[in-house]
Length: 58
Ligand SMILES: [Zn+2]
Image (cartoon, rainbow, N blue to C red; front, side, top):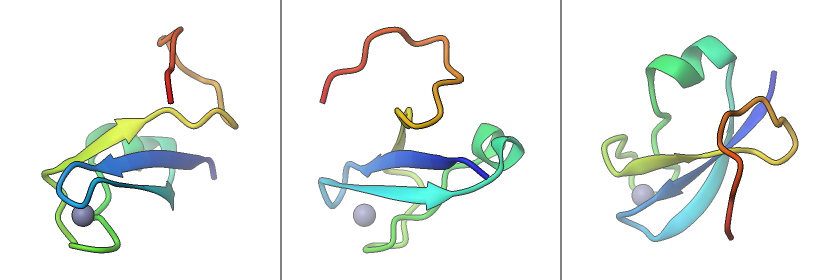
């Protein structure tokens, strides 16, 4: 199972979540701090480069 990186806009905190590709496609996980899902944005995990996005800035 790949590890995905996410960023919570509410907390301004990045976090990682372990989930299947199917889960990742249809839903965002909840933030471990505020438990919100709406303010969570996806980041592409560098460990698992199955992506069409070419540039990633940290
Ligand atoms: Zn949060």
